[in-house]
Image 1 (cartoon, protein in one colour):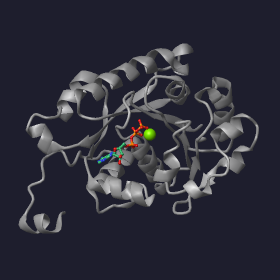
Image 2 (cartoon, helix red, strand yellow):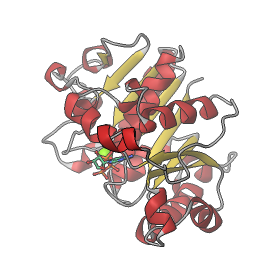
Image 3 (cartoon, rainbow, N blue to C red):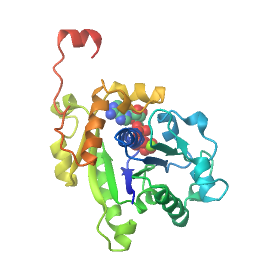
Image 4 (cartoon, rainbow, N blue to C red):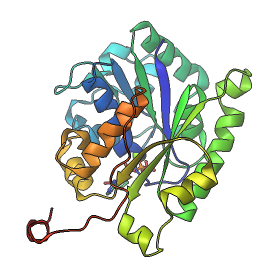
Length: 270
Ligand SMILES: Nc1ncnc2c1ncn2[C@@H]1O[C@H](COP(=O)(O)OP(=O)(O)OP(=O)(O)O)[C@@H](O)[C@H]1O
Ligand SMILES: [Mg+2]
């Protein structure tokens, strides 16, 4: 059975799509057959970040409505074996997603022997976000080190515990992971942002990864190359560690301290 993982947050713009792209690419690089689904109906960002926007013909909603088969809509990544993208539609109304429709697709993906189904959730707690988390076995709760983001993540934890299929059917609860993104140690030290410890204390769920605030992320999304391909970058390395932990490996947390920039680093903007 595939592990179904939702990347969720409540608050918008915290790095869910960036993380979904990086983590699914990383899992495929590690030999896991992975599909990443864009649940953000109407916005459709994931295909841009994954660099396959020109290859989108059919989407998630077309498959739900029986206008295309899953095989027609799935886009196979050209860089990594075992990686597939199911894009969202750009125009349709948000009610296009139904539990039955999503379930049908998840069941078909299960039949195709995927190891991982990654669900990139839209922001908020409306239908799209609820559909993205409903079937999840695990949740990567993506949070920025600031009060409003932590509060929304806490809210999402409540929803996972009450409105997921696992909650409804009294199964083992959705396994929760904290992914702290856009972490800027310098700003933490100056007291402008919450620290890893602060966030962990409030949310009280296991820490999966800490992704530093990094220019490499913008560069990556502009070029349609998930940042995990940029293994010279801090963010790319932090996502590699995150994927390893998801696979059960132990990795030390890096990039938690402010980097003391030496002369050459300053000079070359390292
Ligand atoms: N580690 C990071 N360092 C710097 N910028 C980042 C980082 N992670 C994400 N960003 C930037 O933050 C913005 C939002 O990222 P992203 O689209 O991944 O968030 P999202 O949670 O999916 O947003 P939405 O809720 O709208 O779907 C983007 O401009 C992205 O480049
Ligand atoms: Mg997004």
